[in-house]
Image 1 (spheres, rainbow, N blue to C red):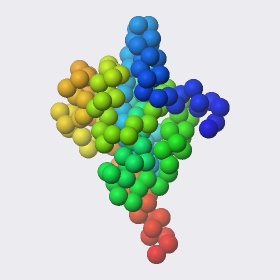
Image 2: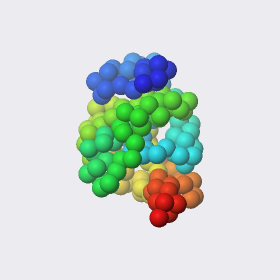
Image 3: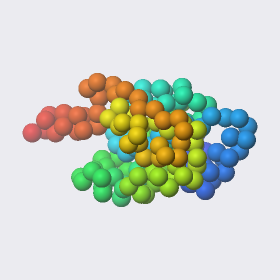
Image 4: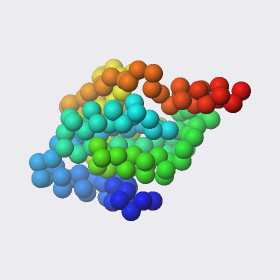
Length: 158
């Protein structure tokens, strides 16, 4: 892993300690999650919008096993590489990998101030919305999705 990313990719217990310290310092914690398989401009714009909602942005990334359960045939990029790519982004303060199908337990442990998901989620359907008081569903960047990128590549090779 790139040296500048090592301090940003943490396990849940270490991240929980950091979050408690940051909250004690008055920082507003923003949380989002997803597979982030083949990171693209839609992801980077989304993460920048999420970061603007607070002081610290935490991104929880689905593990390879979790992605396989949710999206057969994926991921394309390993969990460690996805975490490193996300950690390299200036908008992202911390990254963690979670193995569950949803981040409910992670959200319950971290208790962020703000919960963010993409525009395909209604606020009341966002996992953890019963725990976090401020919930946002951010708009998608049209024409930008990992599935579209994969299909385009497949089309070039068929």
